[in-house]
Image 1 (cartoon, rainbow, N blue to C red):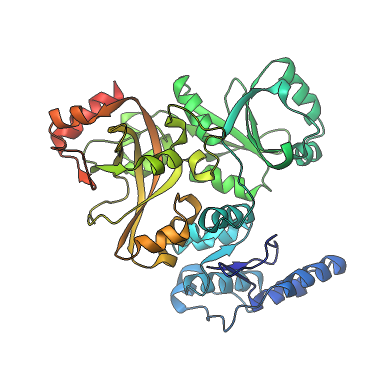
Image 2 (image 1 turned 45 degrees about the vertical axis):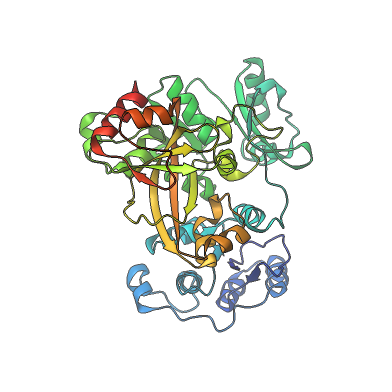
Length: 440
């Protein structure tokens, strides 16, 4: 697997036989423009640490027609050179923290192959087991349990002069907090709930839905590009309002009217109002069998007995996930509802998700880079599956059912005649029964 890196960042990993890291020769133009001599020299040292992408492809006319013309050696020209390498498959991933570069890649449908440094480390860990241990699952604590000297607070203390005063206030009010533990007893992430409600995304949405909140508001400084992209990807929108500290106010509705409902396709509806919001009428739906070991990794919060470190892989904590199968079905479209049937032990449908997109391929590299940010599979497992065509489904986890739908119920209601061994289409009449069951 090949990674092309932006010169504004560097990767704290040494290349191995599993992956290669390259810089693009066009990026030297960026280095030359840096007027800070000391910083430029440091960046040149880092740049020269990595091999240059050999014979990089030119910017194709199809790319230029979408992104526009860029003057040679300008910032935009360098961006287009990087995207051209990704577009031409000279690289599997582009590693950058640049929000505008990610958006440009998104115009070409390449956003899933643009990753931050943190995401790359996670990808390599999940595929090859060669990187540091990723953080475990979210746990709940009271604000007074937080240590203001934890390194995670340093940037906030720098950006907000009254941060420590605010944290003391949160502690005295016994506010609810959620944390993800990092390395060496430090925190990898945290969130503190205000009565207007905010929190780590998956836990935020669960909390807001269960407590009947109509809106979620989050404030963020404009410089946090990656966080802003993440919020936008989960249905938050810029309200055009700013706080006294200069933060942008983002909002997300958790309910909608029927009039608004009709203006959204099923996937867009789930993104804007979800993850719990689902459309059923006229929406194709499927039952997907999944073995316990993969179900346990993808959906750790469903386990009856939690592990010592539940959900200790990022895709377990996340909303966006992926499923691989050798099933022959090719009719699954974006926005389809998928019901996961846990086979072998529970023999029940436990969760529902919404399909983002699908890919069919027998190329391990193509499958790996398609699902890499959210896969339960190692690269060797993907290689074994690729002895024939693999159906890769990227989806958003919507909700855990209030009660499981058992195999007996599925049979009685004519959805299946036996325990599903492959992906099954749910017929319209049966879907109406399921809709009633999961929304009651």
